[in-house]
Image 1 (cartoon, rainbow, N blue to C red):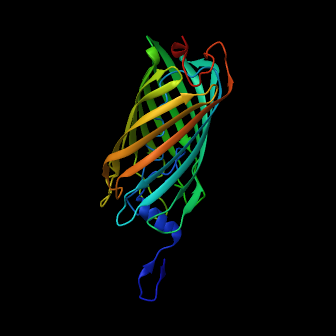
Image 2: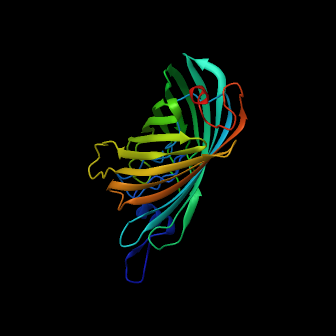
Image 3: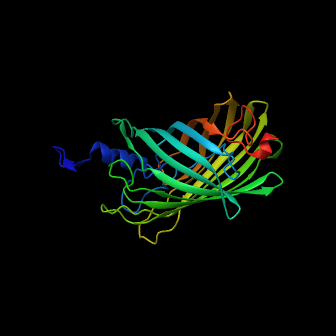
Length: 304
């Protein structure tokens, strides 16, 4: 840090961005701003999977999924706006392992933040590579387990240490419903950065309850996130609970979803966040024997 004429420390733009966010998550693929030692956030953005039946099998094919969200956190005396742009390439392979369909994912992101009336800061997030097994349990139920890794980053805007992500999802997709619970458990491989920032393991939970009416999809969503204990003195674990509503429309083949969430509770984020999300799911290739015409990211049960 440099000192101003009065001898007070003056922080750089990057440091202001980190301090204002207080370790808030910046992107689906793990863009995280760390505020200070013993304070960080989850590598996976809470709420990122809302609206998707992630416990169910994806019809064989290749899909491009792009999600953008913009929100404002009330970090009084000012506010902190944040924009996240994430893109994912998904391949539902024709292979089964242990009875579950093998599904592969590669994700990346670019985000921008404007901490409390200072200049906008932007940067790339950590890339994510992951593999998932999805089982058809029968009676319109599906369960999936994903194991992935966030790769180390050399940019000053992202977490520079690698981490593992374990994700467990259970979905019911019968009668045009999507009832899904998606649990995230993250493990940082290096618990402390060179600058002294402590990276706690974390748990997130995304919840979806929507129903289709023809080409329309409507319903409610909610998510919660929490840092897990680190045992470090002075640690300030972060957490939040948010709720919202979702609306979607299938244009065939592109499927659009929009939802808005608002924090009901926040812990050590510096204020509550209101966020608008927009997602597009585009099938680049799809097995027509498994997917109904004009549908994307649906299961065989939904296509009946």
